[in-house]
View 1 (cartoon, helix red, strand yellow):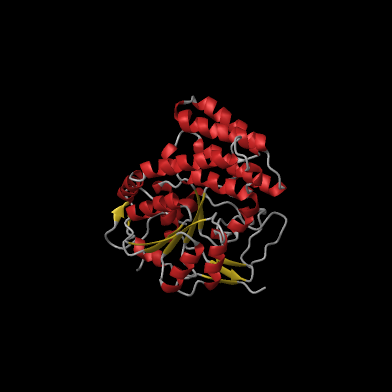
View 2: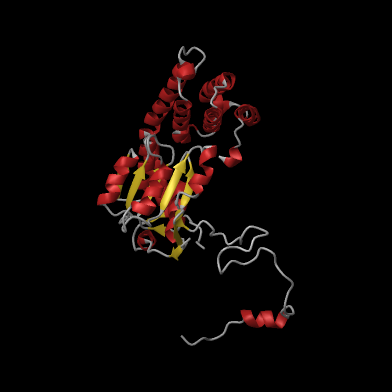
Length: 156
Length: 200
């Protein structure tokens, strides 16, 4: 097998060192301000996603058996995408656990509805009061979710 | 290899042309806002790999930030395509993949996709800027072979796996052998540290 090892020019490397630009702290502050302007829209998207998960995969969903594993995975991923706005609630980690569960179900080709239901209940709870739960209680709830989903956060 | 990004470090991304790719609108908005905040003026957004490929064919980029999980064609396949068929102007540019969750089946694929770095979602400006700084400053060699095109994955110089001889001529064994010469004396070490005039 022929292996070529070489160092291609890195244009970004030259640009980033050019005169002018921003201090890193100012760049980060500007970016954070820009992201903050998306808070309302992102939280609305988050709640829409949670509602869609409930409608399609909740206990009351008539056709949830016919839904795809991929669909749940994608919806759970969307929660993670915007979860910086609900930092400290545990919602992001619960959504990662749900991704792990959907992935796991896809691998074995069968739904584990009890596990899905537990995750959906946890997501609702964390969205509403996650930020005010004692840390130990929140962590214990998340550990419980990880056990149910076989999710290993250190490997995510 | 690279210095850490300090709050007082000055970075200039004004002339950088950046492509951000994410199929989820709100996530793409967040990525775009973050990158714009860093001072990037030439920012191109794509919501699908097909859109990104069209842009790659017509523009020269300096950095790509791409989501992993996308329908039809995902970020891994996109990077594999970029590294082989992205054209000379774009084939070797730094790529940062962003992902909220990595499927078990994709762990090895992501490692072998040819990206420079993988960043976990949710994105925070501090972490993303640190990674951009890192990929801009790194001097990793590129590897091109039938099974992989991308930055050298063995950049931590940890040696070949224990019990193997390695495949490269500069591979050193993981086991450290017995010392072949006596230890340096204190005077010898002091002499190495002593300032001395040099001819420039």
